[in-house]
Amino acid sequence: MADVNMFAGAGGMAIGLGKAGFSPLQLYEIDPYSCETLRHNSLSATPTLACTVHNLNVAEMDWRHVRHSVRLLVAGTPCQPFSLGGKHKAQHDGRNLFPEVFRAIRDLRPAAVLLENVRGLLRSTFRSYFEYILRQLECPSTKPRAKELWQSHDQRIRRHQCSVNYSPEYQVAWRLLDAADFGIPQNRQRVFIVATRSDLPVYTFPLATHSREALLTAQSSGEYWERRGLPIPSSLPRNGASREPAQGLRPWLTVRDALKTLPEPAEKEAISFNNHWVIPGARTYSGHKGSILDWPSKTVKAGVHGVPGGENTLIGDDGRVRYYTLRETARLQTFPNNHIFVGARMHITRQIGNAVPCRVAEIVARPLFELLKKWR
Image (cartoon, rainbow, N blue to C red; front, side, top):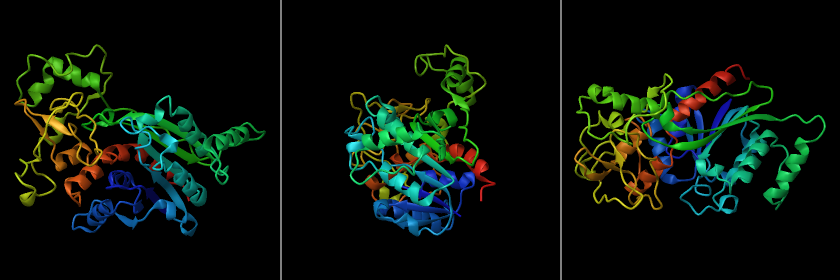
């Protein structure tokens, strides 16, 4: 039995899957620096991963050669085709690798599938392609013909689904989740799709455990500041108290909460430890102001060239703006402290910014692991 993770990146999804019970994992990744990171953290004295790493382009993989039954297939396909900050080419972008995911599903016939992508996939201009993805997940055996346009393939799937005695091969559920709603100190909205084979129970997404309203209530009452030994500010973050009840949820975690146990960063990379050093040159740009300490971080990003101008910055208590250190962004993505990233700053920034927060992956995957426990 195997659990397969395509587009594994630096291991955010894989770490979460491991904590949820899916281990060991078969990890597939094309980027050599990410593969070095994965291998380092699987072979170190304090490993964060139990896995086998395959450094290859999944388009060149013949999945029919996989000899084990596959319990779970996970894929966080490249987000650039659907990103709000990208070129918006969607299915016309050469980096759209959803077709490779479906080729793997057809060949491996996993018991379950877990997909993750950016919220831009839900934009009105991409919505028809998103719905095509969902329909294709229901019946992946209806495969596209050679050089067939996706619209034509979609029409054939629709006709098949309307046929007499139609029965889906997989049962599909999806949600747009904000990481902050699950105790991650970062506002990061992503689409998650889970498909379980028709002979298995339907997957149910976990409910939120934290909320914006609860954080605002704690701040306006003074509880937030008192617990952290801070003076109550004259003006509260995000313009004051919530007008909605917290409904028993815990407050969102903040940047201050996430970074409080980290030591002071080293002044230079050469003398740093654990990817934690001061990165000079931070500036604010119009529309790209830094995150504040007493609110969840803005979305950690990979940047066009690995160095996001005006992004991944923090406004300190003294009002000064600085870049997050790489270890701080890893904290915001809930990577363990002993998960070390390999490569130059540009490569590491990409690895961390493109990752699924480990804790989110664990929360989404845990009920799926429980559902699949009895599968053979």
